Image (cartoon, rainbow, N blue to C red; front, side, top):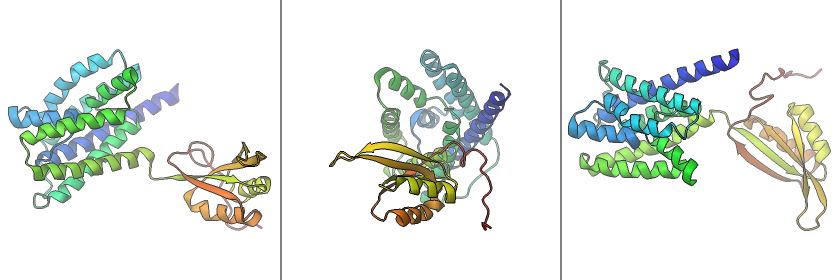
Length: 292
């Protein structure tokens, strides 16, 4: 129970940090350089331009009905994190507009677009990675996914297209193109932050020498392996497939081990964006540099 409380405290801290970064980019880059944004945040920018209402306030107002609707469909924890993320974003938007911080990038909209994507992507990536959202179209997308089976990515893209099109009411085409650059950088950075900076590799080996290959991987690299039962598609003969997850820097060593026992082995190497367990998230025994 104590661990859960610590985990939730870390979640709330990182969601707040993510909202701070996202809000900073929105105020000092997007708003300062007249760049639009997708989703509910983009609607608050449209309202700011035409009605001169602070996005810090319109963010709360627009999200209240969405949260009330989401109450029926979101779990208690998801709903609590959504409310927290919405309040945090509103707070940071309010604060950054009153703190005298300015980025002197008005001379280069391309740099502004890159920075907008970076701040927004890192901030949102931290929020999503801890299971939070900032409300808005995320809530609608989750409800649609549960009720209709429409993937979240597809509905979020649709909302962004609608809002960005509406943003042409106060932006010219040049600024909209830079906004699209920011949106692309945003999506790439969000994926990068969610997946982490470390990417492991999964190795699948089909070989008649599966046992010695597996033994060598366990002994020399100290990585666990799993045997998968398979059947040859042509001769229908039973085979063992060796599956192992290793660090990216260990791929060359794995290839040498496989080649040592079976230079005709069929090998597939795949990206693993997250690996949990011994050797990855649990403490691993320190390896000796020299074996005596």
